[in-house]
Image (tube, rainbow, N blue to C red; front, side):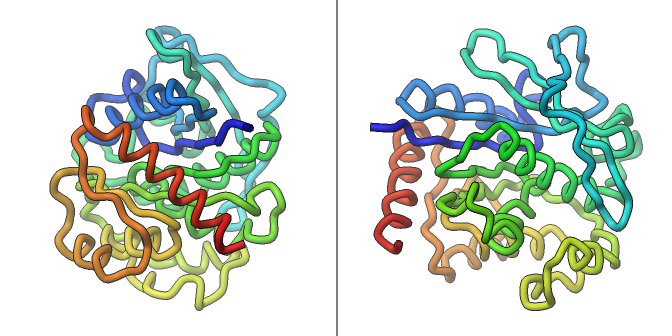
Length: 274
């Protein structure tokens, strides 16, 4: 039997990022799910805080060289890769000087969220999907971690819905308590329309705050996971009221078996519906 393929997209992964709920789970899950018999790939942004020499990042020339248009501007896509010590996994990095060269992640030195986090999120999500296509690797499940990945379910279900590469791909979105407190650019909806989305696709994004962005991801996902022990009460209520299959919170030490079974159930449900 062919191995099932799980694509992990995360805004942070240990040891390339400080330890948080997201970075820790995004480090452990790929390894243990691979050990459980599935094939995996993992992606994160190449933030300027990452020491390339220490972590031995190197550019993957055959995957680099594409340009992505974000808000009518061309941005070169650079792909780098590094191995995770003590684990037989590689992490691919989405890089671009305009979005990820700065020596920071999502906030500046004063704790203010960057004004272009919306475009950085767009570039990151599309960059991963285009790179996976170039790899020729078709994921059965894409598991997204962190709000910077929240647009991926929308891209898969509305923009790449007729792309044979993702025809059978299911999307799982993990909700964490890593909220941002600054609404995204008011022109964000128009930026997405430039990509090809319509008003119906973007319902609820008139004012893009943390809750609205996560509701969009939940609405378009095939499965939702509570990634932190405590999450926004509005989002918790929204998850309980949707028909999207969900997995309750499990600690990192007890997550593996239920998560592996959740992937299988999502894949099986998709096969039943075909």
